[in-house]
Length: 261
Figure: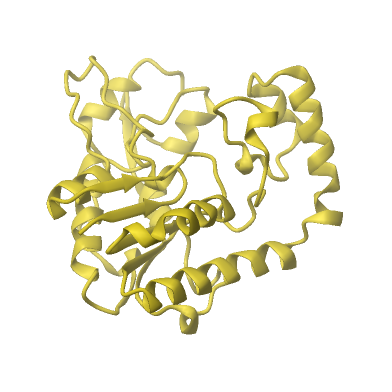
């Protein structure tokens, strides 16, 4: 038995940390928790900042090795493909699709790279319309499910947003699916000097997201358990219909106690 986990930062076990301020160094990411619960070898292939097509290419090169797969489908609107090695080493910038110039100027990118993406983004409506991006997303989802079905690989599909509003079709799914994971992320709040603040507000002030896979530890544990329970079923579950998601963690409040709000 071996599991492969694919996706963007919501599946990247390196995305997040508890610092020495808390004094806790356990990796609470759901990919690590799932691997440990299954007690088997695992390839944790999630990579922050990447696209659906990036994960698809990884999956296609490795799927024959697995008995189990979790595929987290990133947002369809990201750049489907970028030569990251030619753009900037070790930075995956698919998420910069159609971002405005003000954001690009704040990211600390090399000046030439920022200008390059400004040019890219102005061309987006002409070369990467929604119809094409949605076609790519639909094709990846359909093929991942078909390949796993034909090769007796157990799969759990994970969608970031509401599956009913995305360019997906439930009929393309041969296995269980969880949707609206990003709502769990956005519902989490932090108590900063008596004020309830979202991570979006925190990051807009130039701070980093310390949460593993953009989720609090309790929610990483809950997600790992949910995925584990779905390998032998065919169920379509929305996080909206699951109670008990954590919305706060005072250890993380400490990390952001000094930010301006």
